[in-house]
Image 1 (cartoon, rainbow, N blue to C red):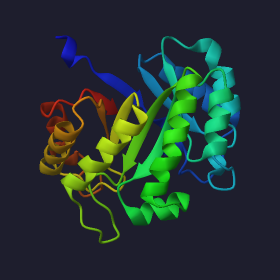
Image 2: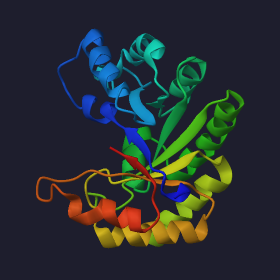
Image 3: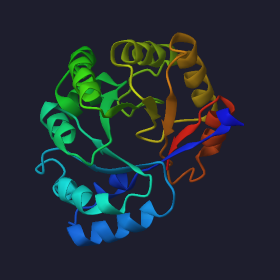
Length: 235
């Protein structure tokens, strides 16, 4: 069935950025080239951020340049958290999709970007228009979408309101609900997806899940997403 077509987003960037030892550009290219043969729709391939913040991603532009001739229908996604990063991504001819982080947690939003959630949405509006004019796509990642480690109360209704605002103001290709610190349960996933769909039925939703050592299979969160109508999964 057409509505059962899954979009797979492979996320090597998410794993690589946490590794302290710098992987040579050539090693990254060799590894990513193999992933490109696997048939993933999108590869989250790097990020355009300050090398002081994430040293592992300092060579993202060069990695993408070297991999571009080997594309096999894959789209390249990069994460950008500010105007400088978005500018670089817009001007890179081989970047297809720009991922922008937004946090349901006000604490994490402030720590990550030194902006409030309201300020982040205002900034994102401007980025969304420029990304569209450049002929590229936008994916907004809502981090801490299923809970946070700061004691802030998780509410599916609050998540839905922010997702609605993002959809109305930015019309992204997708909104990825991101379980940044592995707080999701199957019931939370169902509640979150259903609430967002009710307020923003036109939004294309995805899941970006993490699992904990206590629960390596994720308590059925992927199945819950599928049963709730999610057809875009980060892996």
